[in-house]
Image 1 (cartoon, each protein chain N blue to C red):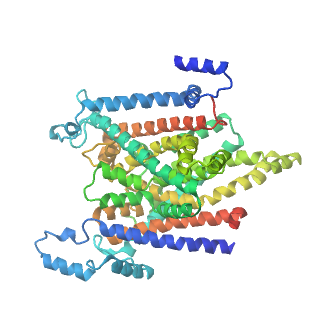
Image 2: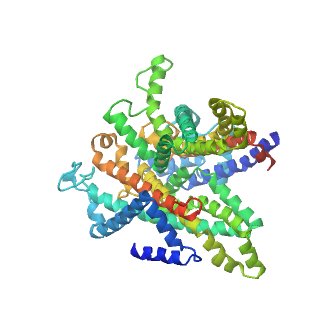
Image 3: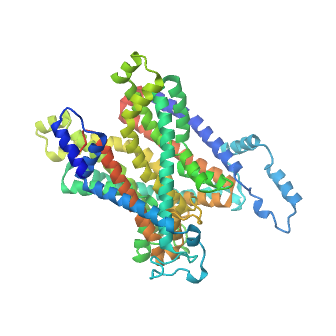
Length: 321
Length: 302
């Protein structure tokens, strides 16, 4: 078991290195740098700009800067954001909390919706109920998340006015109070549910086919033959065997959230990591951009790693390979 | 319709002849009304959009008219105007054309790269497969949407061609992996082994035997990819990292909805585009699913 996890971790390491080099290089090739905005400023001459570039190390070859940057990252220093005028670590710290809670709420909604639907659809397969659930997954699969989120915001945020339309918390509330937490939750519901309704689709489909598959296995026939009541057959025998693979997909679910947060946070003006990514691209804030992309990449790789580990716990055949 | 009935009669008389690929697909569509409607809808929409846009002048439509800003739908502007006084209906037609064009272009390009890559890796196997798969793994760990956005800002003279190039660069992996695993299975089968024993060259085996046998998989995957690519393009344009505003697409129309005022009060700008993308993707997917069933004898309805 441990051998597998260690081996899997060893594969992850070069992935991280490659990702960081590529992201860093891409950021270097971006037109303009952190001081481009100062060009044309009458108070700063061209020489002074050049001096500041030199002082910031912007004129060094890329591998020197990469080395500097990596040694900083390892020590937990992601550099200074020139646009937001604060350390990147602090900047990300503010945003990552928001994104974290958005992901948690989305995942909770996803499983609250997906598990019952999948079970119902698998248990009563080919019934009218199953057909409508399958219809939902079919349509949900074809709907782009950002359009769905936009329509949700339009209907429930603007037309009905049931939910707040932007931000992560009501302004003017003191952090730590009960109202503050409540307001945070209130702001999370609509984006979370929009993402969840699209994200459930895969899980529902998978759970359904898994249950239909398990239903016909010999051990289920045995259980029935022994006179086990139907509820026990489903709750003890079928569910246990069908839910395990779903648990393994938990990691991939996290990876899938990353692309989604970029869209959903933009639509709901929710100050999280996805929005920070777009802001840093637009503002050409390299130090922030590189750190954000790297963090997302690490999360994605971590999600895949988590899934592999859970999968290997659940299914011993994978470990042998 | 009639010619096909004749074909089907022929088949009944001559039971030894297996039905041709097209008649299988046709029968599948006849059985699946939703797919048939989707197909008809797609054909009509495509001809309409490409036909009408011949008579529309893109520069004329994207020209700013300050006297007609945010006009609601009226007789002059069927779907009103946007913040630059530009006719939304005209943008919708040209936008659909542009979105379809780039979707097809990217799907074809990724398809060609993916098929070549997958066939080479799967058919030759061994070391070649090992190296190619490591390169593919490397592409797979990149967070795709973010990488595309970073590259879009990186390119100096950015336009439609560069945009489709960037999208292609990060989207070929899925189909390559699929084709590779199929080619791996296929090359172990008797017909290819027999061909090898008889001394056929690799090129001949690949082009006359392997490729014809995986055509259905390629067609199905590419149809489903087309839906995904249209969605991705509009998503990127929505964020402002796809088509520039001077080249309207369904995504640029949607991107106006990033302005809360437009989203709340001026539905005519973004809602038609949203509905069109949704219907378009659903229709392409319906057709793709019908093709998928036609390709697999066990799932056929017809």
